[in-house]
Length: 305
Image (tube, rainbow, N blue to C red; front, side, top):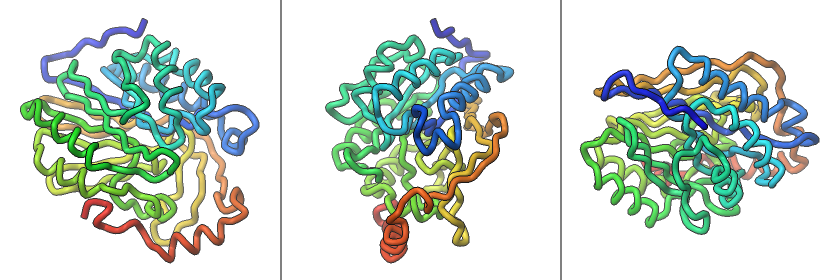
């Protein structure tokens, strides 16, 4: 069984974020670059080796690469080494039904996950910081989506406990990052999310994944951030950088709550070292790049301003 964490004081919590492990089987292009199941184990071992084991791990989407049963079996095997409770949210590479079925067999998941026929939203109220999982997936698309109904659910959920410090965790990043191959897709309806969050000042952080690289921005007083992938990093895209997959040191994101504020930091994983150019993986890349750059990043309105 996963050990139950103990708090040093009433308002004390350490949260780890692991994102985009892209667990996949032998014979795939990604697995030729990196052993993604082992990288997830490395991240979990990093959490276990911290001076204080995290109270919970937020696993923010793209848990596997192709959504196959074999990949979820590998995911389950990797998560057997989780040193604390794990809370997942699906990403665009996940199969929500298989994700839910997998976690139903694991000791590390302390909650019953939502029925995958509907949105994968849920809330955990067992900690000093309230944790709200917000599903941004859009079936059949790599881009994210915040629906009116999803925004209303979040608004109602946050309104139930306005006094509780809260972290909202999701997969897609609802802001432009500078990596055009991610920004081209973006999150439709992010303006709904921004409007809701502006009305709930107890939200102390929004954390996401998807872009495979650390980034952050501000929506007024609120910090939003993205965690790097434990599998491989993405090129930044800043100043015209190329769309590459980089096998270099990644990290587990850490968020420490002291009763008044969140301190963000990270714990590095073991260092690897190769690069894979995405342009070499797609024979139609030139047409994709031309169309993406002609459209430009998804509009500021769709990114929430």
